[in-house]
Length: 85
Image (cartoon, rainbow, N blue to C red; front, side, top):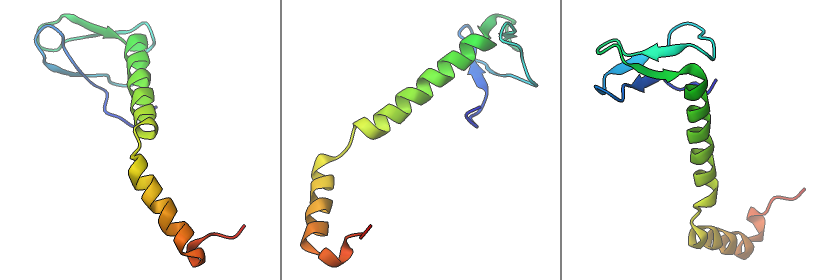
């Protein structure tokens, strides 16, 4: 999927739990320490996709405008650095 760890912390005891194999969307992960229900695989995938989307958006939205302008000025000042199509 995202090549990320499938580690999930238990909301009850904060123990580390992992998805194994190829779970179905309705499968529920149970804590290996306190046996509490942690999360369903469908919810896990949805939350992971949401976090990844937020991370990617933040990477492109939160740019350093002053750095970009300095780079643009440097390229415009040196025509030999420009890329010709």
